[in-house]
Each structure stands twice: as structure tokens, then as C-alpha cells.
Image 1 (cartoon, rainbow, N blue to C red):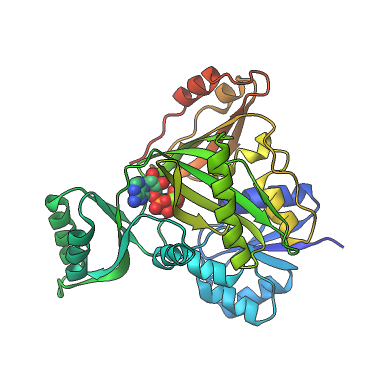
Image 2: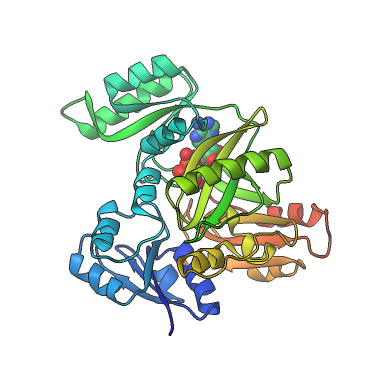
Length: 377
Ligand code: ATP
Ligand code: MG
């Protein structure tokens, strides 16, 4: 009988999950409180608040299993579904931890995994104390709901701190001692680079890891990724870290971990209990895509090989899309349009170039990169 996967969220990640599911003969239904148009172009969607119990349960009644495309869904929605006996993967315990930067970093440290130094901050007094402790440069991040560098404030000196505090005071008005959110202040790392790992675990505890991916960010957003990133020692360290986390949660599905590389060691920046932008290259550049493997894990199907079949270069298209025709004129290039309204700083699509016909050559990648003129603000 046809299986149906429910997806909380209806953006481009849900859309790409739905496309991969479709190839496997699996139906998907996406549920989102906001704009569903990206996923709605390719699958059934429901637009209703996550707090709307009736709609949520009606959606779930049509699904065999539920997953999510973002860790920013309200935990209460996942809890409501699980309390009704509906399977939600990855687990709520993993979701609760990974949607909060403070819990996430505390968890890493409890497991003996390194992160940047950080301190929890709720108000001006705590912010000043944290800056005194960690020193400049540092970065203030909201503990929840941040993505693509949003909700972050870099502080390089006292002037930055003063302007941040006065902007708080202007926003909050009456009580200058209080800000409305919870933040962490984090030491700014002078790292040697950034990379990410995507791993997948099935219901029986089998684990597979994709090759490490090397990432470059611009304006706090992922702009470019390259894979495989061939460093056997780092790959081994990353795999070991991922395995400990996956086992801890008896995890089912894909897990993404973003790392800073410092002196040949890995520090966790953050984790995502979902498919990840830096592994979109796996659609064309790996034996099994991250989307297909997530679906296989959810449905108790055998996991596919995570092997890369070429070197892949991934370019995010932000703020505007390049010409499809021009991109497709390069052999080995693939064009992905998420069907979203253009806006500065918004991810609208991506381009992957795989070096099938030019192993080891990076010239075409450089030329392609020059065709993508991102608009950040
Ligand atoms: P995304 O959704 O793209 O993962 P995000 O909003 O969750 O982004 P982070 O991953 O915390 O934000 O930060 C985005 C980028 O900003 C990092 O990948 C890195 O390039 C830079 N950055 C963030 N924190 C630090 C830090 N402490 N030291 C050095 N660079 C940092
Ligand atoms: Mg990040």
C-alpha cells in the first residue's frame, strides 16, 4: 500500500523531500502555518497554525509517519502528535535540544565535544558580564529560531556593544534592563574553515555517513559548498562525533552537524535534525541523495550508499536567480529553482556542478560562481 509521509514545514527542503518521495512511490503532505507555495507546487499542502490541534490531528490521520523540514517548528506540535501515538522522527528529545543553541552547546560539552565558549544572556547586565568574560570579538545569538545568520549580532568592540544596547532600549522602551529574548553570547572563533557532516541512522541502528563537505559563508549565509572534502582524519573525527549523538537519541533519519575546523580539530557550531543545505549536492553527486536516505530511514527501508560519485560544487542562489539557460550550458551543471518570490537575502535556488567529465578540474566551478550574483540586502 502507498505510504504517506507528513512533513511539518512547506519550504524548499519539504519540496525536495517530496520530490524524492515521489520517485519512490511515496506520498507526502506538508503542513505549515505560513506560505506553503514552494512545496505546494509539487505536493499536497495544508496551511494552518501549528497550535490548531484539530487541523494537526486531521493531517496526521492521513500519514504513516511524520517528519519536519525545520527545527523551528513549535515543540508542542511534535509533542501533541507523539502523545496521540503518531510516530514523529527525528525524536522530540533531539528536536528539543537542537532547536535551542544553549541546550545544544551544553549537551555537546556534557558529551565532551568541543564548541566555542558561550554564556547565556537575558538582559543588559548579563550581556555586559558575558562580554567581560569572553572578550571581543564575540557574537550574540538568539537561542531559538535563528537561521541564515538572522538573530545574530557581531560585537568587535565597546562601540558595537553600546549601539546594540541602545537598540534594545529603543525597542523595549520602558525597562532598559530587560530584553525580550534569550540569547547566548559566543566567542568569535578564528577558525581554519568550516565543514559539515550528514549522517543517517535507521530504526535498527545502522548508520551511514556522507563525505565531509567544505562550506563557505557570506553575510552569515551558506554561499558555497564543495564535496567530498578529503581529509580522512577529520572525517573519522566527525563520524565518531555523529555516532555518539545518533546513539544517544536512538535517532532515526538524517542528522546534519556544522563544524568549525581549528588546528585540525572539530568544534561543533550547530546541529540540524533534518536535511541540510550543504548536502544538496547529494541529489546529483552521490549514489543516494540525503532526501532519499531520510525517507528510507523513516520507512524502515534499507539505507542507500552515501558515496560521492564525483566532486561536487554547490552554489546557493540568494536574492536573485541566475539564468537557467546559461547555467545549463555548462556540462555537469544542474539548476534548482525553489519557486519562491525573490527578495534580497532569500535562498531562491541552488546550482550544483559535478566534475563527471572533468575530474579534478575546478575551472568550470569558478566560471559558474561568477554567473551567480547574490543579493544579500
Ligand atoms: P544557518 O542557518 O546558515 O546554519 P545560523 O543562523 O544557524 O545559520 P550559525 O550557523 O550560528 O547561524 O552562523 C552562521 C555562520 O556565521 C557560521 O557558519 C559562521 O560562518 C559564522 N559564525 C557564527 N558563529 C561564529 C563564531 N562563533 N565564530 C566564527 N564564525 C561564526
Ligand atoms: Mg549554521
